[in-house]
Image (tube, helix red, strand yellow):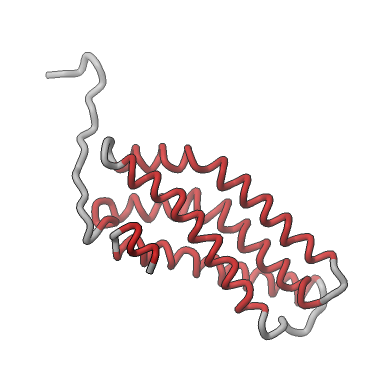
Length: 170
């Protein structure tokens, strides 16, 4: 709801939440492969998917808000593709740094002798890394570009013309 209120866009809210959910399921699957085939556990503890989901949705949406708000602000003064490129460029170092620190923090849990914390740490760290290095820099900008002006629906979107390079006026 907060994302919907902040962005005033049903479409953006749906695809931003969708990318975080996709990231969660990817982390859960990858985590299961590691936990089962590498570490030899028969199953993931019952509450681990819920705990990981809560953390990954909160962190993923936080990164979404940070990046997309920058893009939303820039699109008012420049063409959408340029706003996306500059918005991603300006926020990528902060998101990458925060993602690495958080993934490292959760990965430390994998070194503990408590199976529940090991599983939680692996799945959550994987989810954060996927979110940091795949979803945020590639998937969200690509979806925003594909939707174009419809990404802002039902909010208002004014088209900003691409400025012609100097000397090319006709």
